[in-house]
Amino acid sequence: NAGVTQTPKFQVLKTGQSMTLQCAQDMNHEYMSWYRQDPGMGLRLIHYSVGAGITDQGEVPNGYNVSRSTTEDFPLRLLSAAPSQTSVYFCASSYGPSFEQFFGPGTRLTVL
Amino acid sequence: TQLLEQSPQFLSIQEGENLTVYCNSSSVFSSLQWYRQEPGEGPVLLVTVVTGGEVKKLKRLTFQFGDARKDSSLHITAAQPGDTGLYLCAGVLFGANNLFFGTGTRLTVIP
Image 1 (tube, chains in turn cyan, green):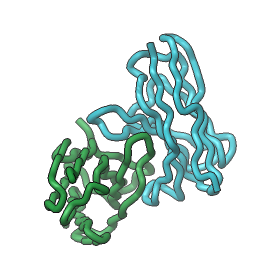
Image 2: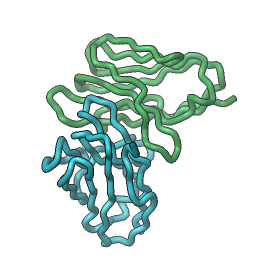
Image 3: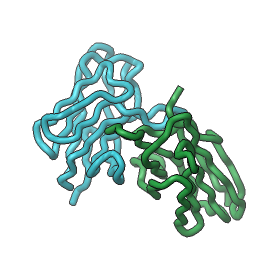
Image 4: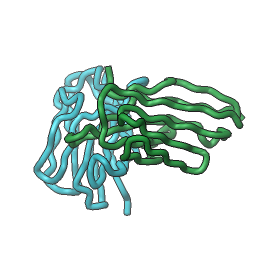
């Protein structure tokens, strides 16, 4: 099992550009989520999904879109990148929010 | 203001010392988890507590869930350099479908 994979590992964008962060898991988990991590603020939930076709907003959803067409994949789209979106992004999967979250290795994004 | 506040934010201690990290909220949680994160990696689960007043031990680490289910603590006995990392608490509110993380405590254990 590869667990949770994320691509790319590093990315630099210019303000206004769009991009998609990829996340995939091979553990047949129904629950997947995206977090951003900023210094002194722990992890903040952006969007989450309880199964294919179902997504919902977390604490900081503005500027991000998600979709869940398959159980395995949960991409995160930045519509028009802003410097405030400079952060480390983590994708996680689990059997549910109360169960162990398995995290990917993260994507470090810089927006200039 | 975040739902879960951790204290202290930073902690630097000598090898062999004891320490306690706190995770506090004004909200009530159905369950609470503790994770440890090392540089360049994602968090890894240490423990889940689900009952108010519950105490769980993992070798030198002791986790407690408050009676009112609003807070938790992590106590490390005789800290070792391998304990160095970012410690994060995370909780699920009753009836909610998502997990909130705390602000984190960065621990450094000096040999």
